[in-house]
Length: 183
Image 1 (cartoon, helix red, strand yellow):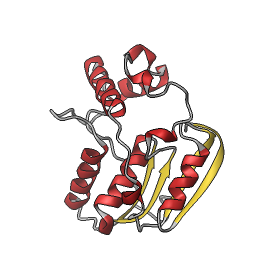
Image 2 (cartoon, rainbow, N blue to C red):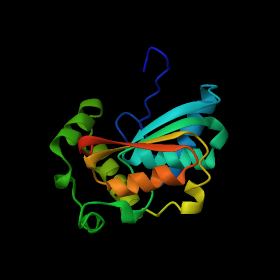
Image 3 (cartoon, one colour):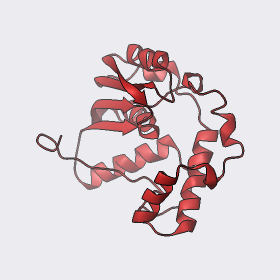
Image 4 (tube, rainbow, N blue to C red):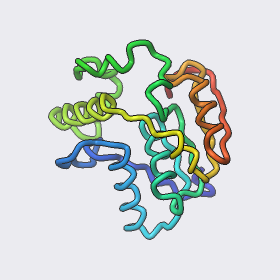
């Protein structure tokens, strides 16, 4: 992608080197932060690829800031709670602990931010966001005009049917299913 595009990788609030602030994490807040960054960088329009929660953020960006979004690629994401393939997924956030976080993700975080308290705070914010996940209404999804390529794994967190539905709801949607799981 770097041959034809400028790549900007976003670390959202409380992730890695980006400091925490006194507000809940939400897809809407992350989308607003991205818009603020783009305005600061004087970039009027972008193509967005978002993975997992970033996929949901890409949908929110396309809905709330349609003139800033040229194309989106939501990968391994969802727009509705019903799209989850894993039994008990939503209940898992009721009593989630940092011990349940994959060791590789913890190690990756601590490599760029060696503060264990920051890791704990990021975990708590991520759990809160997912525990309070609200569906994006179908009427809003249908307003997305940006060409959209929905990517999902054959054994992903969201079902293939959910990804197909998302692609069918946006005005210019396609989907691709890859072998493998989440990521």
